[in-house]
Amino acid sequence: MRVVQQICTGFVFAVAAATLAQPATAQTSQVLSRSDLSAPIQFDWSSIGTELSVHSSPFNVALGADLTMTVSTATGSAMERRTQGQSWGGNFTHGEALLWTNSHTGPLTFAFSQAISGFGSNIMQNQYGSFIGTIRTFDAGHNLLGSFTVNGVANGNADGTASFLGAQSTSGIRYVELDVTTHDFAINALSISVGDVSTVPEPASVVLLATGLAAIGLVGARRRRRA
Image 1 (cartoon, rainbow, N blue to C red):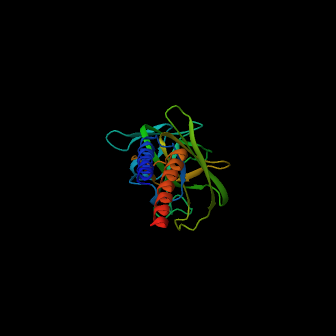
Image 2: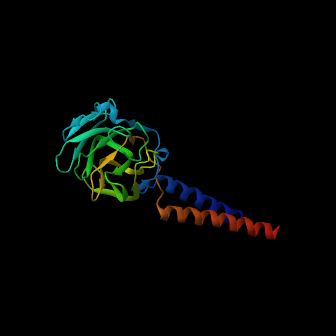
Image 3: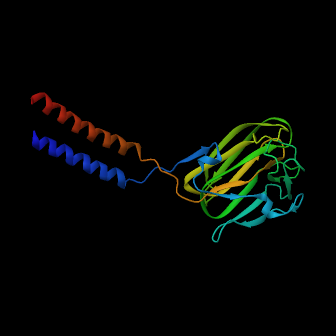
């Protein structure tokens, strides 16, 4: 029986080592709040200009020593800086600096000089009522990593209830699109993650490890019955 137990124990260690060596499954998932983005960069639109300043498409902003972001519209139309409670009557938090698509429909595209792991912002269409917001993420080859939607409600309460659109990926995000299908829209500060996102082991490896642990348990149970 000792030999059998030693064989099973060796099997478990071998499977555990193989599981750790397995490449993790690339995963892209929706993020429902800013707090779910680990160690984000917070980019506030007040840094690009004063209230009502107009910004041509595309324009570039520096996010750090080695990271830049290019912001553009699908139509090439200019964007405008607005502020909740002054030139924007919506349900962002009062005083928040916003970027508006300036009466043109989206999407807004954000291109990054290096891969990021997460992105998010609150969004509101420029018409009161229900809307659907969409976030799409792409890798360096413009391959779609994930597309997610949120059901939003636009109103003039200035209470911070504008819907959050976010996503994170283990594959490395280089491009992000934000969109509201039928109307122009505004967004508030961006949350951007540049660190690693936890990965998910391959399902087959998990099954193998579980099988090995079950074998150890079975041998132990038999020994207790015979004792």
